[in-house]
Image (cartoon, rainbow, N blue to C red):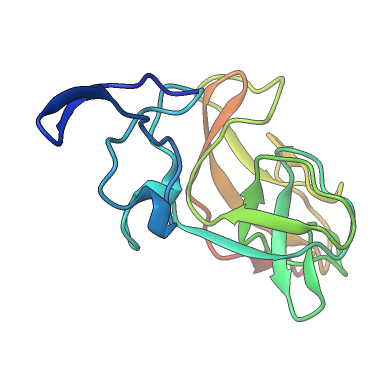
Length: 166
């Protein structure tokens, strides 16, 4: 619950509630407060400001940190395997099959573990995962995803994938 600042209302000093989420008529004209993470909720920001995201239906269960592809059949785990899909983004929260997935199309994937700071990471043959070792083999997809900036955070800056000949 956000703090309640004081405002002059009808000539009297009155405590009024602040809002930590927006996007509704009830939030119009209210004092804004940081959310439970100490940040402004994206619903308080104008369109085009904030994270570049896409919401869609998950075509399978997704884990926090998974690298995903946006397909006509829904959002699914990306894979460097011969039948896999290129990475379009990542999810920061787990999503059940058929649930609504919020895909981040750029930024930091902060839901990973075991990364080596400064190492380059690529799409793995294991669906949804990253690897420090580029894949090899005919028909597999080589796709650079970004560099680790902490042991749990990847600066996501993907390149186009390259289908390997051998």
